[in-house]
Image (tube, rainbow over all chains, first blue to last red):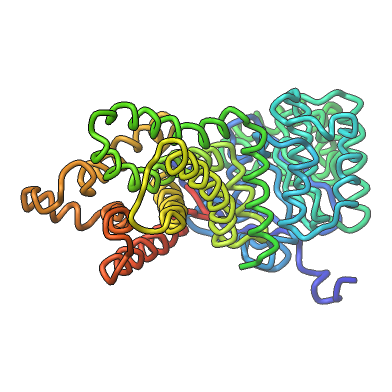
Length: 245
Length: 245
């Protein structure tokens, strides 16, 4: 159980985050926080800085200035390495190992047992392919191996960079259900996507464009604010309103 | 540092190698093949074969491990698995020791096969113990591995990594005393040769081949090679950054 004092600390707190890559500023002073036990969608067009922001949260991005805290500790702290899981945008697993061998390896690093390995293989529906070499799998299947790896250690915070891109609609629905279930059990998920329809599955939305945060809203809040029913139209309305202002 | 994590890394590297039988055959088969060619080429000059054969048995693992390690580590960097590992509870030393365990085992196999062929059918004889030659060969495998780990940080592509072989390994082979006695080289080259770890690796092997024992100078050689391995692993650890631009 969380201590009362800890429960009030947000899962992720970002303040004045600036990141420079290759001489240009790609994140311009972002500030927001993410509550525990929720699924937050990070949405925006590709190239708007979502991946850079996510990299900052898991402590692999060199940041220019600002504060990024996860579970009350600076991002990338040693103690966070077994409490926060990260899915990179491109699948980062070993192509010359089987699905099971990949998960066993990462499982040993995390100190989790083989039973857990079987569980996550089931979660991403890869049981029929568990003993196939990853380089022989399709792109979507490879992405699922990578996702299974991120979930392996049952982390309190999961940072997932486009986990559902290119997946079968049925599987996508199941994965979103899994994300909700994890959040209901107390985990915090930050899930990025460039497809607005995915926003529907989130409790909270962070809408990004050109390295800036346009809005932090619930899906319903966004509808009310823009007067549009479709979330992609709402996002468009938000951008246009931003230009007029 | 954790034995669980380093052995997980070692096991993983060996499993990856096992998936690639052609590489295994090349790693284990090329040295005996080259020694056989050399034996044939020196058919009219058996004395010369006896002189260079012993040192070559001990130097082949250095070159092989250099290439294999630099490519494996470069892949780890370019496929994103290194970035993922850096977000996990894994110390940089765990990773380096894991590689060390795996490649030392491969080095033992490689040196044993090369020695069995050279000292058996090829009729190579050394004044000292063949076991000492094999032990030095394993040490040189580790030297090649640590040098490969370090320089892989300076290659962006596999093309570049492969070119480090002629750029970094060949000068050491040319100046180590194998082709021309070091005291016959011009001063500048002698100084260069003094600064190259392979010079000491060769000197130790040459002593076992001709004098029969390492002696005090040979012990110093072993100490220099050991110190080089530790230094290169340390430098390698510095190039493994948790945070990147």
